Amino acid sequence: MKTLKNDRFLRALMRQPVDCTPVWMMRQAGRYLPEYRAVRAKAGDFLSLCKNAEFACEVTLQPLHRFDLDAAILFSDILTIPDAMDLGLYFVEGEGPKFRQCVRTELDVARLKPPKIETELDYVLRAVRVIRNALNGTVPLIGFSGSPWTLACYMVEGGASKDFRHIKAMMYNRPELMHQLLAVLTDTVADYLNAQIDHGVQAVQIFDTWGGVLSEPCYQAFSLDYMHAIVQKLKRKSEGRPVPVILFTKNGGQWLSAMVATGADALSLDWSTAIGAARQQVGKRVALQGNMDPALLYADKPVIRQEVSRILADFGAYNGHVFNLGHGIHQFVEPDKAKIFVDAVHELSVPYHQKN
Ligand code: CP3
Image (cartoon, rainbow, N blue to C red; front, side):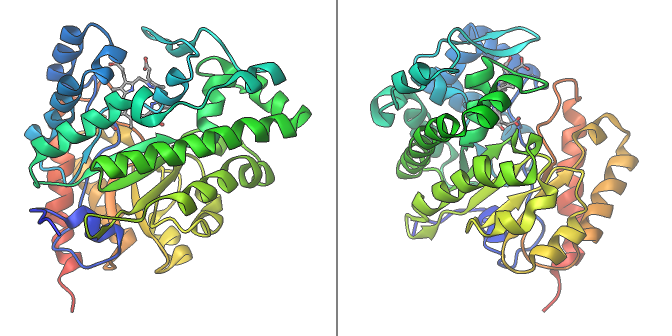
């Protein structure tokens, strides 16, 4: 086993003892950092940034230079998969992602070509290798993918949506067609994550950003069952170490027990769920990640520290907590606030790890 200087994050995901609570931030590389905006300008646009391994590596490392983070996350996007399916992904400033072609009919689904990961998404795997090399064993590298349901939301709606009317109409009127699309995405996501693991990521997170817009039976049938299938297909060991799997369903706090049944190692919580109650519910079956409201980073230092302290106390003196925000860091946050947050987690969590 190659040594890792700081393996707190991987240990906590496996519910092993640590010296203090590890922390990273969803979207830790992004527009709130002026140095990110500079590299993005150099790259030309967001997709060119993702597709250039050296630039992707540079922005992955930027937050680690500023903050004492316990993990790096591959700089990429969940929409690389539909992009590789030739749906014509582009970004409109202020409006988010869009597709030139949406997937709505039987013919659209039948025409979809699952991408060959090693060739069509080779730029992602190259970025993984370049980043692992640059990290040089300091902290672990997280890989990720969108969930099949969340990817389908963008593909069917043709971009971001507030009401999900096209995908929900498809799900209710043509459930078999919906399942056909999700099955294609499930195989692709599993292959994609396994390729990321082969090329060097040390943990993976599945972002189910839109699972929480579903009813309970639909969540189970159209999102969770497919994530379950993915978890079962993943390589759970690499380089002599477990490769932990984290599931994040935004607004999924009411379904934690069902999520545990997928066999994931950890569940990531948004801020609407009380982490102490969640821990009691899941017991020792999984680790928990989260879950400070990202908007706390607009507050003053004492308020941020107080909220970190409240969440640590709510979780309690148990193994298996990775601190994070409940969702991505906002673009208008001052970077100094992120430093206050990260340092507070390390400093204030020490007493919770001094048992035994
Ligand atoms: O966490 C990290 O630092 C890694 C990078 C990362 C990005 N996207 C970079 C990014 C990750 C993990 C994602 C995942 C992602 N992408 C999700 C799931 C996570 C979540 O936030 O729920 C989703 C839904 C997307 C789709 C997507 N890509 C959206 C909605 C946007 C924002 C568009 C906008 O204009 O606000 C993106 C673009 C994107 N992905 C940016 C970054 C840093 C901003 C691009 C830029 O303008 O520089």
